[in-house]
Length: 260
DNA sequence: CCTATCTCCTGTAGGC
DNA sequence: TGCCTACAGGAGATAG
Image (tube, rainbow, N blue to C red):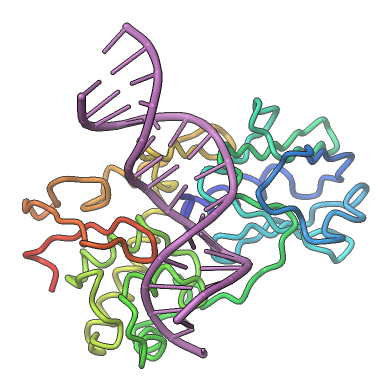
């Protein structure tokens, strides 16, 4: 469930704490992640220095002074912790000054050392707007929600923020993507930007079923502003419904009155 | 190329 | 109270 705002919050904490530090050692347990690192992804890690930590969509990018990158993805239960982190630690790094970074992940959907896949525009950048979204949805008959969750359409949106953005723009999640007008796309793109920006400001969402905490152990506060996700009644005061079938495998809540 | 479905995994919630 | 099952979801793989 870490989506763009949660990953960005983690990025900021990692960048602040690790920037400039050399990597002294790392440990990848035998039974670590569902998907092992790409061949060679961890070569030359020891001795290299962290220049900065970036982000693309939901991917963290550790830039090293060797010119190489180490990519991390939190999957759905992944969490980065400073210090040691218990039995579900899938990857651990010790940097100079005895700084320890642990990647904790109960469900093992996360990854370390993967390649960056093809990703759509960053939703908070100018390249993503109503016109770009309209073009991306042209000729697509999949449900609009399924395409918002497709990282090749727009990078970083997951179930929570897609659900919220569709509610705020008054669009049903099951609508065929190519049925959205240019005006629908303007409202939807604007809602995505507004919601993600607010969630970044609030340090992401810490919901009951996610237990997300940033590397310093701090919770996020966007859940206090959630209008649909995980609720029975929407912020509009109406009873929410779930789509008959999940969309792209995700539960999809919406307001049958406010969303068309 | 596009779409829908299955899969990985385990903590938690709900039912009886 | 306690066990058991269903469910949650990011993204890659696969079938049609």
